[in-house]
Image 1 (tube, helix red, strand yellow):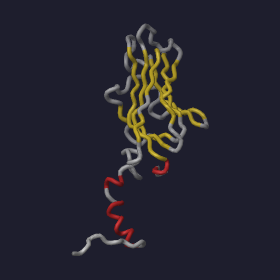
Image 2 (tube, helix red, strand yellow):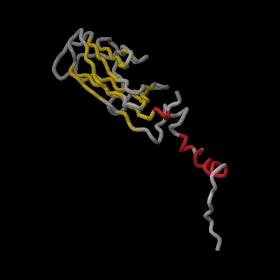
Image 3 (cartoon, helix red, strand yellow):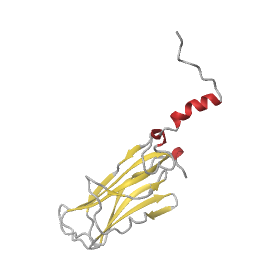
Image 4 (cartoon, rainbow, N blue to C red):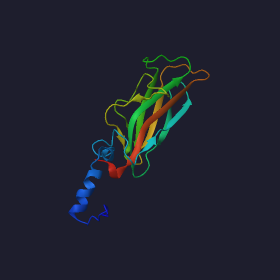
Length: 174
């Protein structure tokens, strides 16, 4: 009776034997150039959220949405900018939402998510981010909500949430 188990010797034969496994589509998920859009095998969910009472007219409140852990990156797939209560009309400009990144070199506003005058997304369905939006290790993410003209009453608050995933810097393309 012949034994079908054979020993593959180190060298070119070992590489050839492993290529079919290493080149599979499942293995390529989360690897350049797709790691920024599709969570790879070493990724983890990133779902920070925060809320605060609506600030007085002319002032703002900063919601801390978390810090990217050392050695990791975050790919942002969706956002939620919400106001709960009475007195705000979407698009009026009375509330302005700005996603901000605090880096070692200072603060910067995230392009296209600066001075947003409408609610975006919901807790059931975040507003999708189309394209590539990544943050580096140790970046702190904040949502700044400025009250330009909403009269403060009872039971009014603002809420922010990010939806995305973390993945190791070692799997990044650039």
